[in-house]
Amino acid sequence: MRRYLQQRLKFRHLRVIDAIITHESILQAAKALGLSQPALTKSLQEIEEIVGARLFDRHARGVDPTPFGLTVAASARRLLSEISRLEDDLDALEGGDGGPVIVGALPVAAAGVLPGALARLKIARPDIEVRVTQGRTEELISLLTLREIDLIIGQLYPMPEDDGLIRTPFYSEPISVLARSDHPIFAEGLDTATALTRYPLVLPTVSQRVGREIDGLLAEMAVEPRQPLRSSSAAMIREILYATDNVAVMPHMLLAGDLLRGAVRLLPLDIPQRPRPAGLIRRGDTQLLRNAQAFVDAARGYVGEIENRLANRL
Image (cartoon, rainbow, N blue to C red):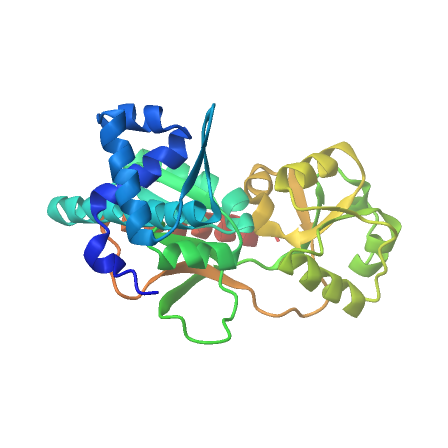
């Protein structure tokens, strides 16, 4: 069935569907759009005729979307969002700065790099607004491709094929052994493998890619953790380290602020590990505007401070 949506579906139709799905009511959607209820009902009938399916079921409390309605509403919202983003992009090009910077952050970067980077940026450019979305690589790549975020910061995992995105490494997220600074492990003079068998461990969950990497490293060290505590939450791991004698094995960038404050210390991993480059991912079809570049400069500066200060302590 050919619907010829490109010729027949109008921008106003998208707004009508978005309003109805948002308010779950024909009357409330009409009020939000500044239309009469009969006018909005007529527009909905036009859309259903174009699509060739009923989009909403009416009931006493309002409306419920049909499967066709949910599908059309999802596309309407995506298209409206893209148009809104186009307006922002045009304003950004006109002004040259780029407006708000929308950053996608992988978990380690979100917990360990972003707080310090944003603090630096606030000092240098207090006028810049930053919005952060945290997620996994696949989720953020999708948002970047859809132009819903400007860039991604975090580990640069190898990709099976070229996706047209530009990856720029400027720091590393090595896996380390960490404990609170007054932990008895630092006074015992044990090699790392022995120390890891003596104290309980807190580890990232195996559902995370880094969790599986860490399990592989522990196996290489012949360390078999006994019922380790596992968590995907950096905040929980931090509190466990402070409240117990647990030792963490994870990328030390996750607790970068704690390391800089001296609240947490590192033990060396006594086996070689694969490089874990991290940095910036951006689209290849656009250049970073000034505000986004200012954020990247702040992140580079903070990472450099972390690496220099940790190198002086080790």
